[in-house]
Amino acid sequence: MSGHSKWSTIKHQKAAKDQKRGEVFSRFSRDISIAVREGGSGDPNDNPRLRMLLDKARAANMPQENIKRAIERGIGKGSGANLEEVMYEGYGPAGIAVIAIARTDNRQRTSAQVRSAYEQVGGSLGGPGACIFLFDRMEGKFAPKVALPVHEQTAKQQLTTFLERLQSQEDIVAVYTNAQLSNE
Image (cartoon, rainbow, N blue to C red; front, side):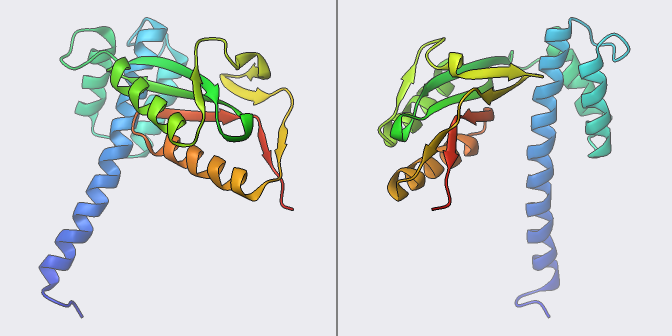
């Protein structure tokens, strides 16, 4: 039985569900635009990454109109900002190397947000090549060459908080680290 009214309960549930769908659609839209730009073609037959993303977007019931707008934005015809992929490298708590990949329309805003996240935990944002040599790139993802164990409880907690803060940012797509959190 609803507390106030049945319609009110339905309205709030629908709003929460629509917001989650919107976030998924926004992420697909960004990914599609970048795939078109990087692949050089809006034709899924010529661009395998775009084809894969279109299949995933259709499986998530993304409207066809949204897909068309994302493809046009990637080609440069449509309205909207140009998205670019940016990689941020730095060292977090306990000297752990962290790579954050972002897709953004405003490089300055995103770098300020990432720098703030690093500084809040006593880390430092480095320049290009600051810690990428500690990782191997395999199939578009980064794997640490050597994982560093983190034993101290405070360092574990700081690192976990830092990684959650980075991943919660809207523009951040992926975060990689060479930390190995031990269970001792």
